[in-house]
Image 1 (spheres, rainbow, N blue to C red):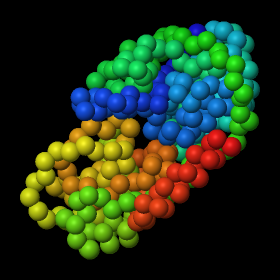
Image 2 (cartoon, helix red, strand yellow):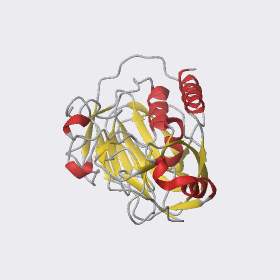
Image 3 (cartoon, helix red, strand yellow):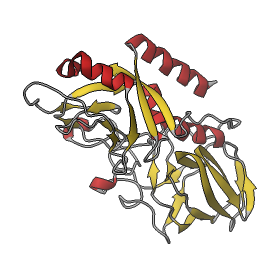
Length: 302
């Protein structure tokens, strides 16, 4: 068991997400940074699908109530076990009664705490992922609070992976690759040029549902569009002209025009951006997007 002494700013239980139900209007949820989530699980010998704790901007203080091992990957935080500094991306044995505390955040926005056996909360439609807006999954459908007690699953003996620093580069400026969207023609050559040349900032209202970007407005022409399915990374442009990038808790459909889509391999880069961080876009083709994803998967499986 894990006792939550302090919850941090916004800590939720996440696994790979609730896939297969979007046609019923049920969001996928899951980790914002799927690479760091998977890496943390691999380090402790879990299946990649095991649930972890997603930590956002400010981390929790946790008391372990049984002997186990854990690892923290993703955004760089100061970590302490009973006051002793710890390294990230390394399997750490812990005894019952010891406490893990997060200190200052140094780089990135989200970290993932994996424990051997995974976080054990009830499955909802085949997933343990938290979707706070609908109060579905995770620990009672919400972010963790002080006093919560989390169960840990049975440990499955698997080869643990040595840790390595692999958080996607972010810092305060990042460049992500984008495929042209299905509605790109509504913005014309000028809109594409603005998107490629401008620098935006992640807005203060950004969250797991989407990143609202502050920067040059994108003008569009044409009638209103019917709602259609939207993927993670879709760049929608509302009437205000300020882009919104859809993230893990995105709705299943939307009607705003889509000028582009951030490629799958670069969504973890976005996930590690905090409000006020800068982001720029680089247009690429489908082959580049596929090769980037293949390279990322090979690195995780190596």
